Structure formats: structure tokens, C-alpha cells
Image 1 (cartoon, rainbow, N blue to C red):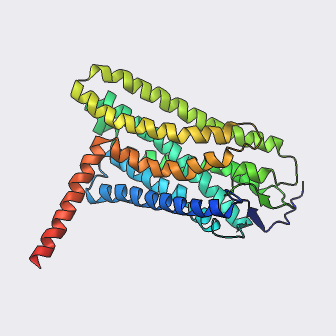
Image 2: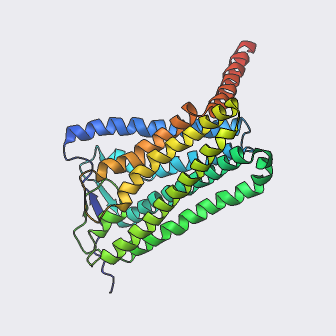
Image 3: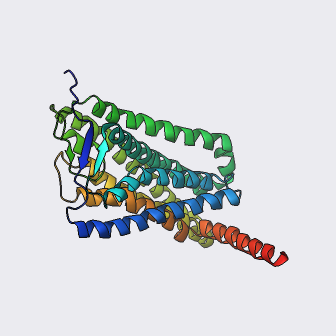
Length: 314
């Protein structure tokens, strides 16, 4: 079919048609986005200032924090601005770019979670060989593979959407550009494409969740052989990872695995996935992970102490 594209921009319906509700959402979303930036930046600064990148766990945690910032930034700034705007528009090119950002950084985060689970598996189940298995070269390769895998996953839905003809209407019943809302606007039958997108996202989501579930089950079983102190320390890190996996995969599964119909909960689940989850991740890692908490205390207490001493010397 020859591509006919008369649409140069899309109009979002947004989260609500009520101006008062949108004003409240503006304040809440702005606060959430500030927490996302601040929380993840603190983790990244802690890793860099503490020279912790040599540790595989902190190396991947740093990458996860960076991806969280990028993932939320793909939608949050535009959404926050639209909450105070009467004309919630985005150009066709901007829509495709936003779609790419959501899927690329979202899928990359999934692959990073898998790598982090493998790192914890080696650390707990093979502690004597940990630094040999998880050396710097292997960590760099694994991180590169997460980004490449995220890109490959993203190319499929992006290429399908780009090839679709859009000849009107151009109103999206959502607050950001995603595959399903765009498929409803295409001037052609999209049932096959919708099936391909569901299979692509479903394979990634369910496959990754299955791998993580098996990995953490093996870790949990192996903890019985360790001392009480070893179990306590491992469960601190283990619990943080499990919490992140649950809050991340729950919304993703609902969004990309349900039938090709629109539910009233779609926007709420999308908010949880794109705003709340990236905000909770740094909180979980710092509050549930004793090792990360201790590292942050040491570094930031030293920093404050150094600043105080510098002022006294002046």
C-alpha cells in the first residue's frame, strides 16, 4: 500500500479534560519528576565520588539510574508542560522520537535488570569466583549488549509505525505517543501489525520476567546454605531487586499484553510505568539495600565534613 501521510502533528487528549484536575496533576508530576532526577543523580554521584564503578553491582546500578532518568525524560517534560496548555500537540517527528525513547530506554532497563540479576546470582552462589567471572571486560560487554538489545527490540515497533499511513484524524487518546494509540489512527488495517507488536513486547516482558523469576528463586534457595549474617546481607540486596522487578513488570505486562482494546485504566497504568516506577527505583535501592545506604552515608558525610572544615579554615 502506498503510504499517505497527511498528518503533520498529533493532538493529545491528555490525562483529564478537567482543568482543576490537570492543575493538581501538574504539581504532583512536577514533584515526581524532580524526585526522579534528584534520586537517580544522587545514586550516580555516589557511585562516581566513591569510586565504586569497579564494583559490578554499582556499575550496573549506575547504568540503571541513568536509564531511569532517560526513560522518564522521554515523556515527563512534555506531559508536565501539556498539563498547563490548552493545545496539547506534538509534531509527527516528535511523536516518533518520543515513541523511540519510551521503547528504547524501557527495554534497555529490562535487559539491565536481567544483567543485575545475573550479577547477584554470581555474587551469592559463586562468591569465590565472583571477581573473576564479573571482571571489568565482561561487565562492559554485558552493558553494551543491553543497549544493543534494547535498540533491536525498539526497531521493530518503530519501523512498523513509520510505514503506516496517517490521513486523519490526528487526536490521540493518551498523554504521550505509544504504539497502540497510534495504530488506532492509521488509515489501514492494523490487526497483523498489532499482533506483531504484542508478540514482540510480550516475548520481551514475559521472557525477561521468567528469567528473573528463575534466577531469584535459585538465589533464594541457595541462601539456606549461608550463615545468618550472609543471609541478612544478601536478602537486603535481593529484596531491593525483587521490589524493582515487581513494580516494573506489573504495569508493562498490563500495557503490552492485554487485547487490542482500550481500557479506562490504560492511562493510570502508563503513569505508574513512566513516572512512578522511575521515582520508586532510587528509593528502593537506597532504603532496602543496606550496602548502598552505607556507601551513601560514608561518601556524603565525608563530603559535608570536608565542606565544614574548608569553611573553618577560611
